[in-house]
Structures are given as C-alpha cells and as structure tokens.
Amino acid sequence: MAPSSVSRVIDHMEERLGVRLLLRTTRLLTLTPEGASYLSAARRILADVRETEQLISHRSSPRGRLRVSASIEYGRMFLLPVLGGFIQRYPDIVLDISLTDAVVDIAAGQADVAIRVGPLADTPLVARKLAQTRKVIVASPDYLARRGHPKMPEDLHTHDCLGFNFKRTAPVWPFLRDGRLYALAIKGSVEADNGDTLRQLAIGGVGITRVGTITVEEEIRSGALTPLLEEFNPGDTEEVHALFVGGSHIPARVRCFLDYLAETLRP
Image (cartoon, rainbow, N blue to C red):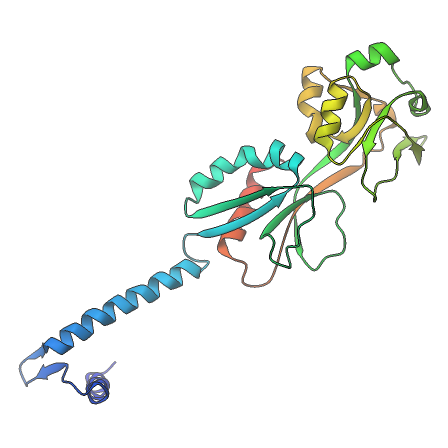
C-alpha cells in the first residue's frame, strides 16, 4: 500500500475508535499507549485467524477426529495391524474405530470412512478400491482324513459345507467345467456372517468352506487348511472398498487416511 493510503486507513481507525493511535511528526512516528494496546490485540487476533485456517485447511497438517467403520473380520485381520504406522505419521488425527458387521450410514454422519467387503449396493458415496481377493474352497487335513477328499464338485453333496448367512448370498458355490460356469447348491451344519468364523470352524475340522484367500492364506501356507477343487475354481474375486462422501472439499484427514490404506493394504 502507498503511504498515503496507509495514512487514510489509520485516520479512519482513529476516528472510529475516538482515540489517537499514532503520534506523527515530519521526522518521527511513534505509538501511543492506546496504539500499542491495539497493535498487541490485533496481532493476537491475526494469529488466531491463521491458526484456525490451518486447522481446517487441507494444506495444513491433517488433524481432528476420524471415524472409521469396518467389518469385524476385515478390521481385526487387516485394518488394525496397519494403523500404528498411520498414527505415527499423523499424530494430530484421533482415530475413532468401530468394528461391526452392521452397515453404518455414512451420508447420515455415522462415519467418515467405511470399509466394505463384497459387492456394493447403489450408493451416492464415492468408493475407492483397496484390495481384492480370490475365492477358494478349503478344509482341514483332519476333516479330509475323516470324511474323504472331494474329487468333483458334486462330491460336496456328501460333505458338511459351511456358508454365509447373508440374505443376498444364495446357498450355492460357483464352478467352472469345460468352459461352462454353473452353480452347485451346498448345505451344512453352520452358517455365519463373517469369513473369520468360517475360517476357524474349518480349521477345527467342522466342515468345508469357501472364503477369500486373504482370510485363509496363512493357514494354507502353514498346512492348517488345504485348497480343494482348484481345477474347477472359476477364479471369481471379492473386492474391498473404502466408502466416503466425495466432492471438492474432502477433509484432509479423510484424504490422507485413504491414501495410507491404498499404500499399505495389499491389492
């Protein structure tokens, strides 16, 4: 600003306040006591404004409370193990974690980010793909020793097949034979709402189950579970998505959390 413009602004301030802020001579410019008090208060106010803008600006260090919802199985097996690194990287963010198999309403403000496994329903939310898993049929060596090793998909009719109890999931497993995809009805003594339960039941020799490889890869590697009927596996996959409210002003804490998950979780 030109000196003359500054002088006019100060004149208007002094007139509005009814006090003199500056003593001006041709050689010297000094603050009055009222001017010194006004300057000190103005600096505090500007500092508060800058701090407030930094708190809410995506250009600042992300901070605030971040509410994250995930299924119990996925949260325990994959989300919780990687959160320590996120907390170290963003110490000003407070993570509010809810592990539940209930579907939360993000649009209604029940969470900032929800991690969902499986097919997505029609939704106005934005979905970011984090991973995908191939489905596999497995059983424990103990179960196979007692009940026999199925050689063909139809052999499953004489076995205890452990499935999901989701309403959207029919009690059938898909198979591929001679280039043709078909579904085989299965039945068993247990149905569950999460793959971790089915994994543990299969390890215990209760029956045969079909889950994502990410759920049982450690057990397959160790020999606790054995893959079955792989030559008939259609290779279908199940995707993992992070759902959130999109738009041009996604909070920095949400954006950095999504980027961190994409960086650390296996594709």
